[in-house]
Length: 138
Image (cartoon, rainbow, N blue to C red; front, side, top):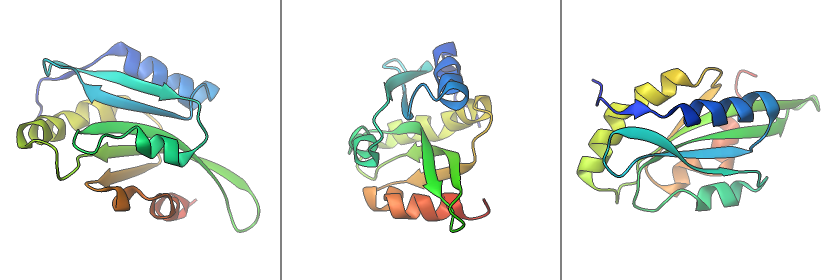
């Protein structure tokens, strides 16, 4: 089911800058105030995963992409772009419904996502859990 919420072209521009030019470490997306469009809420160059987590609200739904860099056991470095669906338990029901039905519009426009993470509380998006999921199969 689609909510009719569109994706602002700036979302794709910023995503491509992250993916192709490493211009950002992460991007946080949100639905605008009148529920008509997905927009970029924040971009960041911070290398800190903690900073990224702090940019996800405790009671608001967001999507995000994070360029996860890690080392394999053989010492080789890998990068995987992780897509986050953040819908905390404390978010309003209507907001969660619009958020859930709008996800596919954004997700389909972001080509090259390696790992998808869903979180309803911060323990589900802890660095170790995301790293484990992203490093499998790479």
